[in-house]
Amino acid sequence: MSSSSCMLAVDDPLFFTGNNSRRIIPNLTFLPRAAVEQQRKLVIHTAIVLGVPITLITQDTELRRALYYFQRPVYAISYIVLLLFSLVMYFLACLVDPGYLPLSKKKILSLNNNSDEEDIFEDSQMMNKNTNYRHCDFCEVQQPMRSKHCEDCKRCVRKYDHHCPWLEACVGERNHKFFWLFLLSIASLILWTIYITWESIVYKLEWIQWLESNALLFCDLFVLIVGGMVVFGLLSFHSYLIIQGLTTWEFVSRDRITYLKYLDDSYNPFDEGCLCNLYHFLFHWKLRRWETVYAKKADAQSTSNGGIV
Image (cartoon, rainbow, N blue to C red):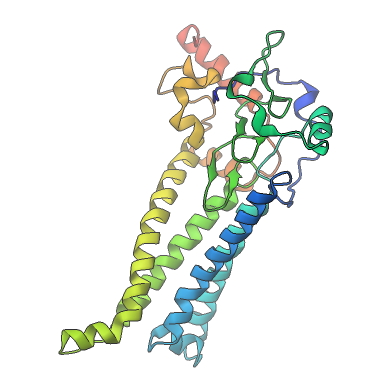
């Protein structure tokens, strides 16, 4: 299916009606199998995040002395707060509505009548010939700028970033900040836990005894290092996207997105400056009219360059 999108009318009421407040609802309303898979991922992630510290508490580690014997209360409380914060951010990233577009009444009726969405072919999503809107025949709605239909969630998502297999959910305009805060907090937790684990390795003269004495710690280090490489890679990439005012979809598929492919490669119409991008990403809760942002920057580009296409 094409991942392009097209510029829309800024003040069309069709796209900006409804409540802009945050909504915490199950992401996969019409996909019970996917919802079960998401619950399984939640359990696995929670088990891993809690399992490694629990194994460290069973060993002679600084974490055991801080938590079990409460020798360093500030150390213990800080570690617990960081761990819980990372879990809360993960759950929010999973469960907060990523910005699903409301389904049309016709689509809701078809779902209630058990129609099979899988029978819709890839080429059924097309441009509406009578307007400049992009029409999604999967959801039977008009897509605002930066929206995209997710083939996994079977829904159109505002400011679509990507579908995360570890969350088993889309990352979009409403939950992207939670996803990034999860990456930031879990990266900090991994670094801290690696340090605790490394400092807890016991020295032995015989290498067999050394391996036996530290086997559990080596397992923890393996999990932490492998997971850390993925987390730090994602954190670095998404931090770059936030500063640049981009999404993963726009970064990867720029040459196939209608509202971007005719612009200069170095030009981003959604870049409002590093500080503004970061502020809007972290502290702006209402859904934004990206058509307005695009129009302002496009006018400026057109004035300076004599046209953008």
